[in-house]
Length: 124
Image 1 (cartoon, rainbow, N blue to C red):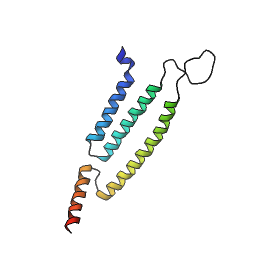
Image 2: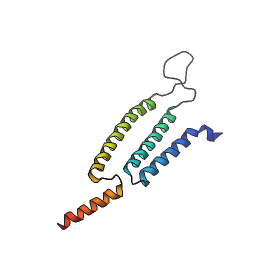
Image 3: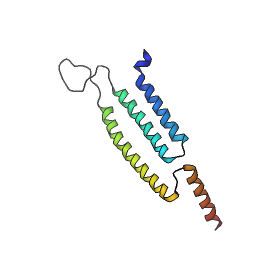
Image 4: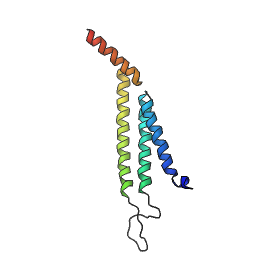
């Protein structure tokens, strides 16, 4: 019974670990951005889950209501979503520039191209 009550936290943990794994394990820059977005989404879900009060209502004064939910976590998440979209669009724009410069989006290949360019530059 306790497991079903904490279902949203299990989803948060799963998404957080999946996003973190994608961010660390992948050498493909687009996959890293996707992993970062999954990780971000799990953090959004965590804050929204923490902001929910059982039996709470919107903080509007009315008769017979004594339990209110705090709207601040939800408002902060709206701002974080906008920042996340901006970060993702900037990262994708950078990946496009990297693809134009290196003709690849694989991190290992980019590092190898840079290493070769550094060796050629130091020997000349």
